[in-house]
Length: 329
Length: 307
Image (cartoon, rainbow over all chains, first blue to last red; front, side):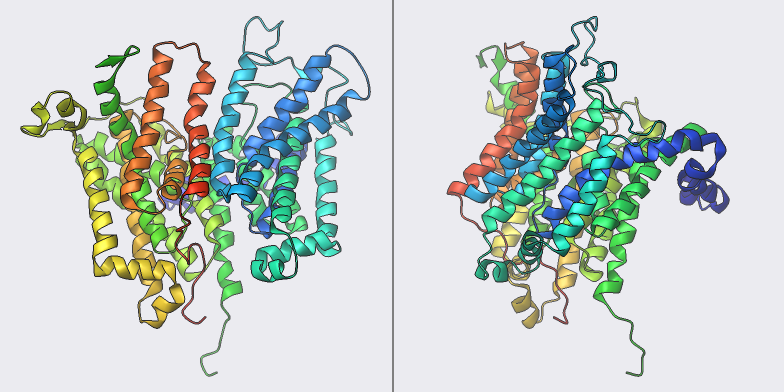
C-alpha cells in the first residue's frame, strides 16, 4: 500500500497479493490462515446480520461494539461465577446471558428513541465508550482472575471445559459462533424473503409514511431491530470471549463491532452478500497481519484498506443511480 | 479561588482549552447540517487534521502552518465525502462512517514516524488590559490564538447564518431542498462548499488536540471527540452560540473529571472517565424532551436536480 502511495506498482501488487491471496493459497501461511478466516469472519458476520436488519429500516445502531462487549461480560460472568463446576448446561446458559447483555445494551438507545425521540446513532455510540470503561473496570476488579497474581484479566475460559467455545471440527476454525453466524444468515434470508416482519422492516425503511399508514408500529420496529442487532452482537461477544479470545481483558474486543458496519454495507444489506463481505473482511485482517509481519506495515493500514473498500463500493452507487445513455437518444 | 482542592481559575482556563477542538469541529458540522447534509465523518477529518497539522508544525517549527495545513487536509478529505454523497448520491450515513475509518487508518499510517516527538507549542496571547483583570483575566483572556479564533468563528458563523443573504440561502437549501432548487439556488454546489467548510473546521479542531492540548501525536488520539461534536450539534439545536455552550459544558465535565481523578476522589476512575459520555446521553434525552425539534428539514436527504 505504501507502494501505491509512491506510485510503485510492482510493490503495490506484491502487497495486495500478500493480503488477498497468500493467506489462502501460500503453503507457508495457509495452515494458520485458513482456520483463522472462519474465526474472524464468524463474529463479524453475526454482528453485521443484526445491523443489516436495522439499517434496512433506517435505524442506525452503530454501537454494536458496546453491545458486543456487554454480551461478552454477561456471558463470561455466568461461567466465572459457576467455576469450577462442570455441566453441559453452562455453555447454553452463557450464550443466553451473552445475548441478553447485548440485547439490554441495545435496548437503551431503542427505548430512548421510542420515548424521547433521542438520536440512536449518538446514544449507541456513546454507550460504546461507556462499555469500554465497564470492561476496563471488570477486568481489573469484579471478574479478575483471583489466581492471576494481580494481573488484569479474568480466568482463561479455554481451561474451563464446560465454558469453552471449542472448535466443532478440529483445526477448521469452525466454532459454535461460526455455526450461529451461518444460521443467522439463513434466518435473515428467510426473514426478508418470506416473513411479514421482514416486509414491514423494508417498508419502514423505504417509505416510512406508507408504513405508518399501513399500520406498522414504528416503535415496535425500532425495538425489534435494535434488540435483534444487540442480541446478535452480544452473542458474538460471548462466542469470542469464550473461544478465540479466551478471557475478559481490557482489549479482548478487536473492533469487530465497527468492522461489521462496513461489512453490512459491503454486503449491500443482503444476508448472502454479508456472508461474502464478512469473509473478505476477515481476509483483510489475516492478510493484514501477514503484511505487518512481512512488510512491516502498521496495523492501521488495514483499517485504511477496509475504509477504502467501503468507499469503492459506495462509489459503485453511481451505476444504480445513473444510467448509461447513448448520445443520440 | 480554590474549592474542594480544585483551583477554579485553572479549571475554567483548562476547560476552554479542552473544549476548543470539539467546538471547532461542532461549529463546522453545524454549518454542514444547516445545509441539509449529515456528515458522520467528523472524527476521521479531525484525526487527519491532527496528524497533518502535527507533521507540518514539527517540520516547519511554526505551529500556525500546522493549523493551515490541517484545515486544508480536513477540507480535502471532506471533498471525498462531498463527491460521493452529492454527485454519486451514496448513503450519507455509510459514507460518513467510511470517512471516519479511512481517516483513522490514514492518520495512523502517515503518523507512525512522528510518534513520541514533541510539537512546537503555541504561544499565549495576553490581551492587553483585559488580561490584567483579576481572576477573569487569567481565566478567559490569556489563551493561545486558536482559542480566540474558535470563539470568533462561532460569532462569524452565527452572524452569517442568521443575518446575511448567504446564511439565508444556506438555510433554505437545508430546510427545503426542492424549494431552494426551484428558486434557482445551486443546491449541490452550496452543500459542497458547506461540507468543505465543515472539513476545514474539523481539521483545525483535530490539530488543536495534537498541537496544543496534548501536544504529541499518538494513534487514535481524538478518542471520540468527533462524535461528541456531532452530539453537541444536536444538543445546540443547530444554533452556533449554543454549540459554544454545549462544547464548554462538555469541556467542563471532561476537565472536572480529570481533576477529580488527579486529587484522588473515592469514585472509581472508570466511572469518572465514562461520565462525559453518560452526561452527553442525559443531555441528548433532555434536549429531546424539552428542546424544539429544529433539525433542518432536508437533513440527510439525497438530492438530484432531476427529481
